[in-house]
Amino acid sequence: MTDINCVKRKIAIIGGGASGLFASYFSALSGNEVTLFEKNEKLGKKIYITGKGRCNLSNDCDEKEYLNNVVTNSKFMYSAIYNFPPRSVKEFFESNGLKLKTERGKRLFPVSDKASDVTKTLEKAINKLGVNVLLNTEVKEITVKDGRVCGLKTADKNYLFDSVIVCTGGLSYPSTGSTGDGYAFARSFGHSIVALKPALSGIELLGADYLALQGISLKNVSICAVLNGKTLYSDFGEMLFTHFGISGPIVLSCSSVINKSDYTNVTISIDLKPALDRETLDARLLRELSANKDKTVFNAVRSMLPKELANLVLKRAKVDNDKSCSVVTREDRKSIIEVLKNLQFGVKGFRPIDEAIVTSGGVSVSEVNPKTMESKLVKGLFFAGEVLDVDCFTGGFNMQTAFSTGAQAGRNA
Ligand SMILES: Cc1cc2nc3c(=O)[nH]c(=O)nc-3n(C[C@H](O)[C@H](O)[C@H](O)COP(=O)(O)OP(=O)(O)OC[C@H]3O[C@@H](n4cnc5c(N)ncnc54)[C@H](O)[C@@H]3O)c2cc1C
Image 1 (tube, rainbow, N blue to C red):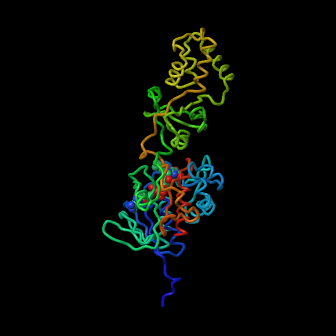
Image 2: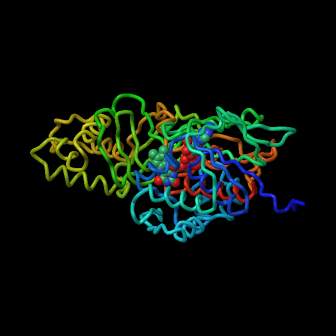
Image 3: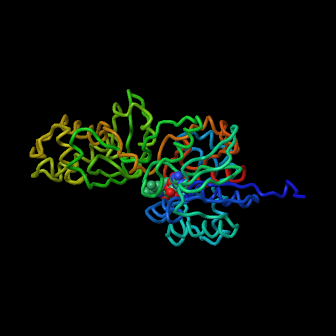
């Protein structure tokens, strides 16, 4: 006679990215018979391109700091992050032989600087636990009977499973396999999908002024995104001008916050000299003007900024580039300083979602149990990773989300 307690539960994981690999590992560790379905020819295709090929796999911070870096639905992440915090990710990789290092902003990377080592470590770990990996195998449908998952279908086969964990990712960089299949699965069972938008994305600007600035990279500037007099986001750091507008670390973070607002009415204000207040900046400008007495005001401003930016500042300040430094008035200085402290641009939109670092929106977290990652609508159906309506700032927090939700689903499926 078979002891019912000894019968292994059969679990399917759809998607072999960061969340799917973790879900597979923890599900197998809990004693289940696990099959991982991946439509690509290899696992972790997106992992290979993370962190510019180095994979910023987590952040060496505590749970609270992680939660402060979740842009959307941090409350939902509470249970998953306390059950599987960044230190557990660190322990997991180090105990599986991958040496890690901490860089600026507590960002965690493999010592080898190779994202492929992260995938290799995960692959080895799931192989050790006997996870059955099916590559080049796209799941077409999840089957449900009497409100409970009973299996799934690929192009040529039907499978029976007790539970299915959907780890199909978002919509960004579709060449890595993240083509939004999970949203269709969820929708077919009545799940609500919160509007899908690019997050951690470049911001397209209105007008044409930015075009002359393309290629200029600015360190130590601050930006502020304002809507109807209210500051939605402000930050200090690096940014750059591009052929579409602006990008770089502080701009990417800004996009994740303003993408849910009436962004076409948002003004981005750049403070080109945040370390200097207006008075100090005026003293600096006066010094430049007297040092360039026989030259034009352009020469004076140019000594403080890249050429094209100096041109734009003077244009916006309505001061003629060729005006001699010796005749620049107090009013001229005031206008120049105003632009240096508050260089404004209107927002046209964001780069297309397939170029975004992450997808904002996804399976509504109100329909998913945060303690188990199980659907509240269908028994045995679980979600993990970017398919959920959770997105974070840069710094390793998105991978951490994939790992924590993957572990949470894997342990509970
Ligand atoms: C350029 C870039 C750089 C990034 N850098 C970082 C970084 O350094 N740090 C960080 O924290 N985050 C980074 N991110 C974000 C991070 O990579 C993702 O949030 C994370 O990988 C999401 O993992 P996931 O498992 O949820 O989804 P994915 O990694 O997208 O995995 C989903 C998998 O499911 C498979 N799949 C989809 N549909 C099916 C189907 N029907 N059948 C079978 N398989 C299917 C796909 O092929 C894919 O392999 C970066 C993202 C990009 C695009």
